[in-house]
Each structure stands twice: as structure tokens, then as C-alpha cells.
Image (cartoon, rainbow, N blue to C red; front, side):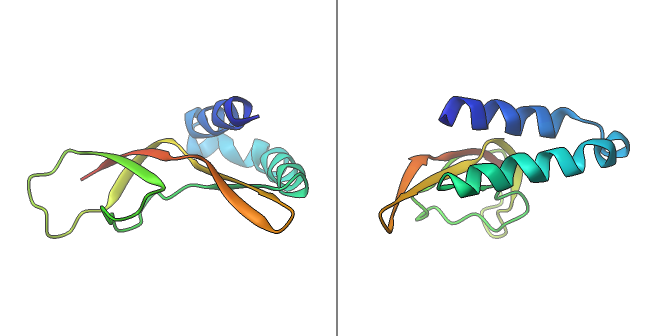
Length: 97
């Protein structure tokens, strides 16, 4: 399931912003169904980067380490909840600038 979610995420990110509205409802329904199955998909784009966050693997493209922000997400964070226990299934792969 992790690979399917990652592929869905890639498709969503490849759609041009001006065309996204035509697909927005479809993506929302798919993500809702994934949530019903216990999956949580997190896109950390725009968030401050914290090297202590174990759910993120980063490539840093900026030499200035004062204000690191996630500028691109190649893979999202994926959690799976079962029996009240939330497990990290996939770390995000991001570019920080």
C-alpha cells in the first residue's frame, strides 16, 4: 500500500496547479478512503526543517542553516494506525532550502 500511496502523491504533485481543481475532489475521496483504512499521509512542504524529526530524510540545498524550510517533497510521510497504535511506514524524502 505504501507504494500505491507514494505513486498517488507523485501524480498529485505532477498536475499543474491550474488543472488541479478538476481532480481535487477525486484526491480528497481517495485520501478519505485511505484514512478509513488507518493510513495517514502527511505532506510537510513549507514546514520548518528540524533535523531531530525521525519521520523526515532531507537533502539540504542551502548553505545558510538558520532558516531551513522544506521546499520540495519527493515522498510523503505515511503512518498506519492499527489497534490504537500509530506506526511510521514511510519517512518523507524532502529537499530543504
